[in-house]
Length: 179
Image 1: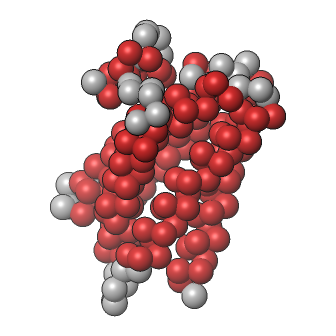
Image 2: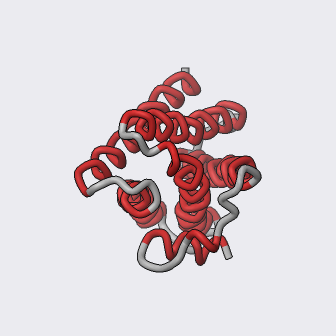
């Protein structure tokens, strides 16, 4: 049901009937955000295996970075909804985006999981995973258009802003985790 809603929200169709857009639906969608954490652990484990690093994986740091990345979106969405007078679209946008990103991250984890079990070389997994991650920009642009009702230019601005902010949190977080 939720996967169908994400597909309909990205392409065409009645996506609104596929999601719980009530007040209860918003906190429920953050269950998807909690699932980002084990997905990130799969990718981190693949990086550790590839780099042949001795020692432990900083799972707490990775979990914190992923939660911070996930929580930057509602903040940006709220600010943009306030500035562009689209407060009525905020809840639906956050709900749909939380679930859509979960499915995108599952694709990334699947690819790196194939590397971990030896079915895919790291270079191929990295290119496919990076392509899927960059594809989240297209997801954000499309959801800004279809769910938040931004025009084309506003949707592109929104998607780029979300991607830049997520990348900034990721890079700053990884810099602190490595030190």
